[in-house]
Length: 355
Image 1 (cartoon, rainbow, N blue to C red):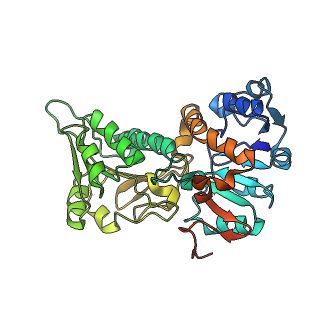
Image 2 (image 1 turned 30 degrees about the vertical axis):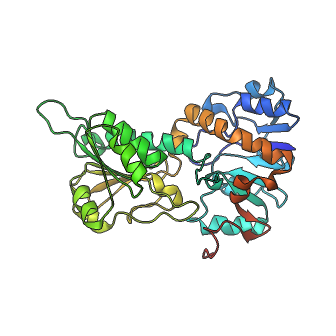
């Protein structure tokens, strides 16, 4: 099969779906791999790095999409991509369609088959293609939140870890999966007092095991209100596979927080888990509501493309090979990942979506 890897077009997105070594392996397995010129540059991979491994370089997006049958990219297609997509394409990337009715309608009109990284689901419920980017997003969330708490950034001027003679900062995390768990671990390692809200007992135990400065709690409304009111940094990392994220924090909660506190919504790809969340870009990443700084960038891992490209590529490569082999319909995790096909909404979380 002809595999096409286009250049990402989302604002300040630096990732590339396949690094040269992976693309070279696919060539050795008999696939014809095309990459758009310059697609790997922000991840520090040159066109020559690909070409010397037998990958063909397309001069532009039009040529890339013309040659590719299986289109493998990182982020959901936007206008620069949509004009080139055709019914016969098999699209494999992050889609996050639940909060994007306009994009969903476009893909249905095109009629292609779209398999979303975030809904490829193993029999045990794990999401192997979402996990690596969730880990990175969780860590970035703490790094960004720590920076935004600095006074020159409009924050309250608090050092999260504290030091002798000062208070430690307080971090509240919603969700203890890959994103939330990594956010909690990094915040705890930095010396902050961390409260994690989680419903699963096994994950609560994992969070408590991070250290004596971590508390895991069930998200009762009264307890959430109490803990958030005293938080310096709140990180949202809740997920319902394929669906719009539930709101775990209201505007009323924000009104009780100190001005200059920070919210980081990692769930923003699925619509956001805070009532006041709205999607932002790396070009204009923050805004203020109720005196609280909001950070809700929809492609957080795109800021560290060298790391992110290597991580996502290692995760998706076996699945790309299966899709390219042509007999992937018998693979349950991949068929669970189908979001749209032949003008139909396929994934259960999307059926009934208002378009």
